[in-house]
Length: 458
Image (spheres, rainbow, N blue to C red):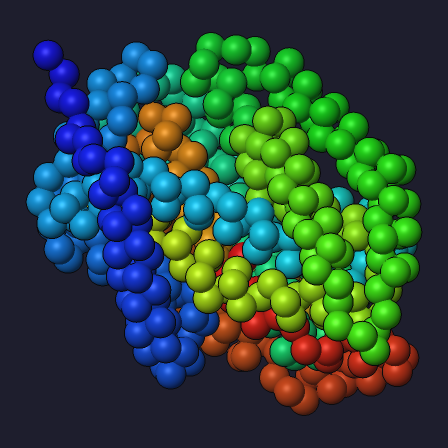
């Protein structure tokens, strides 16, 4: 008889959820602040905070509900006492909603003018920095073909595609934030880098779709082709129908008056509806949030007003819950001396593949050597998106908990290395020289205040 997770009384679920959220927020604020003080993005501290309140430190194992063809797993220890299966399921759902709203704010904040006329450059860059890491995924898949990394019964192609998806992740919001702080969003580097990173995110989820189709025994080409067609159809609906309708809505906004609650409700409904669509198409609701944010028409002061209203709740409350959900599933005690070689291999492919591909592609599309180096480093940053990939992989059963730990380590390592490397590659003297020829409007836009984390994470 397979183990059945212990079920708590419905009347107790609310208490566990409230206690769990409180624990998460306390840990996120404390550890996030510590990391900020040592010059690292708060996102890294919040990722670590989730790990600290999980099995790595307090011990035990989270319960897992039975899935078709897979038995349930009963939880154990302190982590299961604090986060029983029903409350954890609620926190997991809350984390998904967090990503939709977070990516919606990122899409709202992105200056669409910077993307015009650079489509070919951005697409070339995006294809290069996706294709090379995916190819390296097959190399890693062949070298890590053991029960330690790949669950029994999983096809080698499925496993390699999923590793490729993890290697190809780029946290483009982090890129936007760093370029914004440098005053270079209005530069050629800023436009090509941010635009290509957004395309990479969509391509990465198509790779995950291919891995999912392979895992289920479906045709990869047909499955990805259908999803691509549906995604293009959704983008067409957003551009041809949703954007004009939102234009009427946005035009009711008056900069010198407080934003109406109905406007906030409408954009949230739009983000959730588009998130639902991309969840059904790609299995990634966050992509829909971003697409709807980009589709909302520009009007002076509107994006800032929406961000000002939503940012505190999304950044201070919702997002740490998602990061904690990932951390609670991560058990660093699984790491031992036998795993060091595999970890080193994957992290090397992760870093060299992105920075190298970014540099080569950057030079090919006309960036200077220094700018190409910078864009390679920025594209290498994984932020929170690789945590999404890891969670999807666990849910599909195509990676082991040990491999999920490596994904989390990749998020921490690549995010921590981004800021120091960019400071070295783009010193202030070079930034001033690079932005000297920007017009006044571009400089003002490049230096405008961003939502505090639209880009802490990515």
